[in-house]
Length: 121
Figure 1: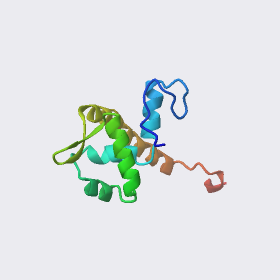
Figure 2: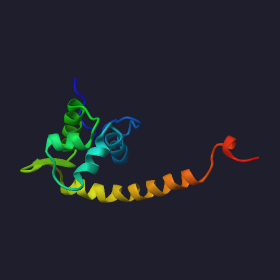
Figure 3: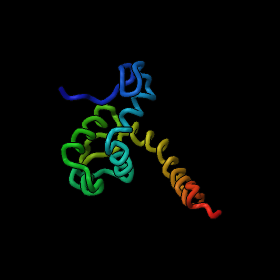
Figure 4: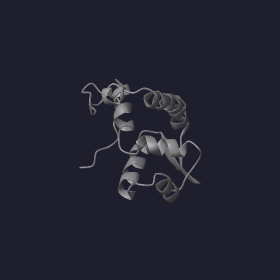
């Protein structure tokens, strides 16, 4: 039996209530889901172009994830390949600031020594 994309209102990984935010986190937490959205944010890509940009994704996983993202109305297949839908573009505008924030976070982690063994005595 093939699992379909998580849907609000039905139990999902991490939540029996199926609250919309939990369904979204379940979907976005799946392997390559965020990477696919990120790659499509610059415009449509064919399956092969998308697979090339995602580097290590297998064709099976890419097909499965694209099916789930299409079922969730974030991605569609247009004349020039797979592309974000208006809902997918709206989601990406919410996710993009996290990319900037994660860069600041990474810089702070590098600048602060967290390991007591690294701190001079």
